[in-house]
Length: 283
Image (tube, one colour):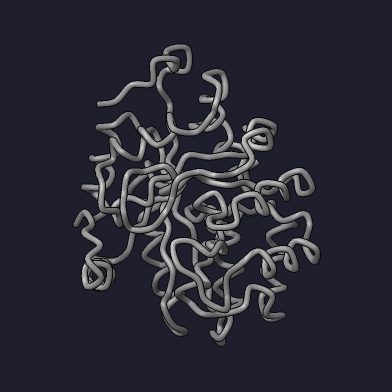
């Protein structure tokens, strides 16, 4: 198990902000899809994911899923809610699709559920515009209840017409009070997302896949280091486990490749995630 040398005073607490969990059959389909492109992943279901992460000193993780099409979100959210009941280690997020007729019903349910902790958006795969007016109800309710959102909106590792800084700037101009985390440090528009942290106090970034040793895409951090150091209170550790072609040790080691001072590690590895996950419904 890897131990950060400067973490003794913090008892090595680490929260992983970016872990994927799906129902077994859906997980198998996701793995098959990745591996059809040569992306070898770890075939671990929920119980094994918990065991792996705990072996590396992780104290809690955010569980993420997303429906690939309309008509799936409600059943997927029911699964995520069951995980929250059975496995206190996970903080499961609900998912949505704006084309669902029952969209508002399951959004309201997620907001009230003691076992769902936020919303996950994956427009790259789900292929919808995050500024679709049908989503405005969710954004307004999320602000009211301080309910967090994790949104894959950067252009890395690949892009389509539904991702990119332009979509995100428009969203934040409309709803500046959102508590929202952009994965992968905003790759491939690192500086654009990083510099937005100064304008939106509820915005966060996670480190998922950045600075890991992989040839899947160019993922070396090339952002503004001075800006990074100004915002170490808004950077969270994430792994993308188990849908990655490297060990969990490599995910942890990637943090050491950022120009982060030792004193910022408790924030990046734990405290920032705790602030991000804080919700009005649990206060």
